Image (cartoon, rainbow, N blue to C red; front, top):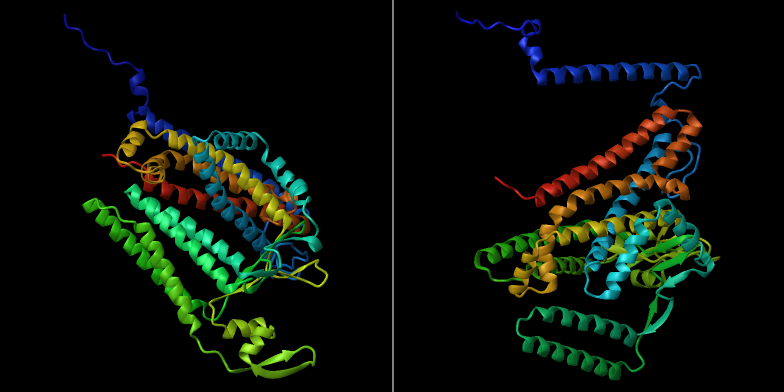
Length: 505
């Protein structure tokens, strides 16, 4: 008697397509998305109904209305500008904090992370204390400490700390400072010599020449040639005022030399790198590229200095309240040229303008002024984030196998070359992913600037909301602005991560 297999009824109830797990997951996701759309649509309808009753329905037309309020750190903005102009000022101020903060916190974090692995007990202990104290302290508390303790302890504007001190200096002081730089350069570059006898000889001969030149110069100059020094930085309770570099009419032509120098330096860098990889011959490609770049920059500056200037120029005499004609060199030395005339006829691509205080010493007339609020939020975010980056760098360096370090020491690499050529390229594969998270944290923590009254995008938008009543539109604008900044940072870090990650088959 043969047995016939009986089909189960449950197998025939559902089609085969609905018995596929992937199909069921897709249907569930579609249903969930449909429910989310319904809920959001209902929420939007309720919000529009509630706001229409008060004539405050969300729109973007109000951004063209007159703002009617002033902003600090706003540049050319005035109260007669539009809401969209005020929002632009807040967005630019936020970028000032984020972009400069990312660069500063990266440099500080890498340095502290390397110091955490130093063999020097004092340096290693201080770095560890730096990381543990700052990492375990709220960032808002650190911002308050910088603003209410550090900055408020500075002197008033009339007694601002000036650097360098204004006055007359003799040439030997400047000469000795330059000599110290030359000695440090000789000591640094002679370290690349392989034979210790050559290294010691170059250092001794170089230092002896510098000493003889100084002695001979003092005999010739005597008490020194007087040179006038003007302060380039003022530090006070009203912030920091620093010098500014203003592009002149020759700046565009000079930048052509700079761009050519950069291109030539990059080509030489790649060419000498190819030679090193092909033959194994060590070439100081970084120094050569840097020398070429500096050479083109100086060459462009010298060429611009050959520009002829007018022999006679019309200037305004404040004492006699008349316009007179006088030689250009005399007008320049007496300071009678306007900034427009100086930018037009100068022989320099960039004009250095030190910060100048008014007669009462209360306000800064020229130069770049950095507000206390910006200093507080900048220092707070940079110092706080650098503590986390330092730990990331330390972990990345320690993730490099010890065999790599032993092999680099066996090849005779110095500590600097071992760190630059062996350790960091491998450590970056571990460092970059969490480093991107810290960059995102810094950009989002910049919204804490409202605590010290810095006019970032968060504070400006809340002022706009309070005046216009467009709360929904204002919050959407803030969200989109921070989303844009975060996506840009993520894109850059992903590209960098792809550059350093391991490629396997």
